[in-house]
Length: 217
Ligand code: BG6
Ligand code: MG
Image 1 (cartoon, rainbow, N blue to C red):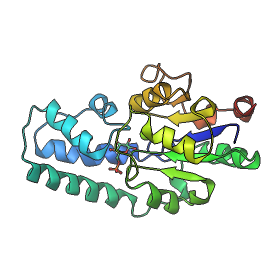
Image 2: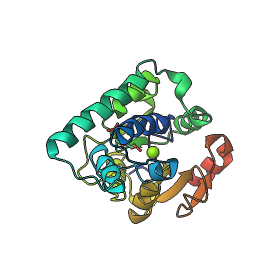
Image 3: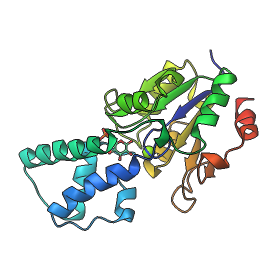
């Protein structure tokens, strides 16, 4: 059995796609005349596409048919994908690559634990696919964060226990999922938003390799 496992969320942790999700949802919200602020957007981070639309409709107190919802979901994803067409390694968030490299050099297992159904193409475009020993994404899970399913599955694939798993997350729902799953949660972002995390860093440039080394021990 492996000792430790390092599980990374994707959107807003490895790549700055959170901004593209926001832009694509904003278009739908605008069309529906629903106010959709950055604060509202925090509620959508880490949450599945289907649930995100429901949250927006709830914010605007809009009731919609399944047919309309399906159409908006397709529209949102098409718009989102249009932002990813030219994506390459330059979109990897600062500080992420050195940490992945350090983990690999130290033979640590790495997994992806994301709600996104677009995770694999993003890892391919950014050249990071080969860094991941396991990938669990929105195509594999039935229960969305804050349910720990996605991270528990990743830990299992990496042949380790939840207690020995370390999760990097930018969303409140994801931090809660890691905590509920008895894993070590590391928040990437604002302390005011991610205060439930065991450790919080503004971004990966703030994480010293000595800190990672202390987690490996
Ligand atoms: C999460 C994002 O990683 O994936 C959410 O934080 C997004 O904003 C969710 O809605 C689903 O992503 P996708 O790519 O399947 O629409
Ligand atoms: Mg995220």
